[in-house]
Every structure is written in C-alpha cells, then in structure tokens.
Image (cartoon, rainbow, N blue to C red):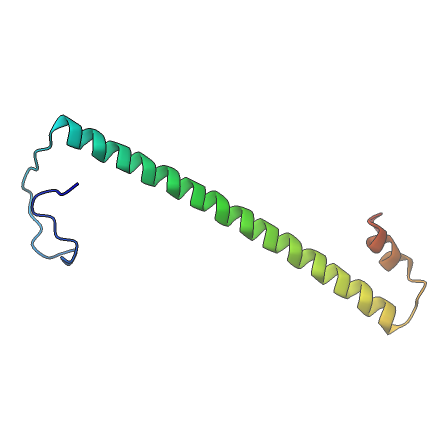
Length: 92
C-alpha cells in the first residue's frame, strides 16, 4: 500500500506534517490486517526468543553441573556421594 506523501528514505523528523490522510475502506482494512500480522509476528518472535533463552540457560546449567561433577571426581574422592547423587539426578 502506498500512502501519498510517504517516502521510506525520509528521515524521521524530516518534513513531518499534521495533514489528514484519507483512506478508502479497503485501504483501511488492508492497513489493519498488516498491523495485526506484524503484531502476531512480533509476538511469535518474542516467544521464540524466550524459548531459545530458556533452552540456552538450561543447557548452560547442565554443562556447569557436569563440569562440577567432573572436577569433583578429578580433584580427589571418587566416592563423592554428592557428585554421584547429582549425576544420578537424585539430589543432594
């Protein structure tokens, strides 16, 4: 849709006016559909980012826990029950 007077290369504060833009009903409906589509795409993007951050955080926690277990075993006591419980997922 091309709104009269709109120039995508125009700076934000360049030649802004308070002129009223007239749209036909079809143009208005198209504009509303576009806004809804952008809003839905934005919501999906936010959900995807949240999912990826959560997944990355969980992966980081698992990797850190594995490193702690490996360092506990490498540092000495092979019978470290706390490390064994964490490894088995039993808890401390």
